[in-house]
Length: 112
Length: 118
Image (cartoon, rainbow over the protein chains, first blue to last red):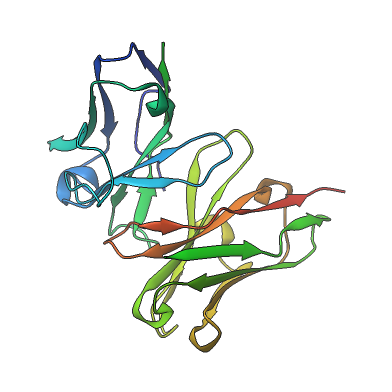
């Protein structure tokens, strides 16, 4: 199973907006609206931030939003906070494998 | 409050076996698919296995097929991962997670570290 492609690292200043991309193929990201995003702080468990491309679970700040265009999904953080510094992973449904899902390689976000 | 608590990790020699457990509370286990996800030191997340509500369907990532077995006991509110023929590359933190989404998980445990080394 090939991982989805994310930038290894990104950075931004407090208050800025940043968009993390997640590129797959028509067999995963592009073919289905089942992309999730997870935030992971060092030493902590992943936390669900976005599901089904653009839906936010209860309790996730509305500065986090998700979208998709073609084979690329995106996570946008509008108005960075210091506590947003973390690793972010996308995941997509894919029917091509027995285990029907694949992660991206992760993006380390630094808030300067 | 939804909680998932993993246990059973530790140091094991290559070729050895280990059984991980995940005890859940705050929801009805029998209503959800469940997953195991792992993260090697300094690396990204990897889906390992998942299991249907009644245990009738189980799926694995290719790298663990034939070596790992996912199972569950809904009466004991527990999920398990039996790991045999362990390799150095299986060294990772293993998380259990609740699959309330299509191909995704909404709640995760804190993880248990498995180290395969001689």
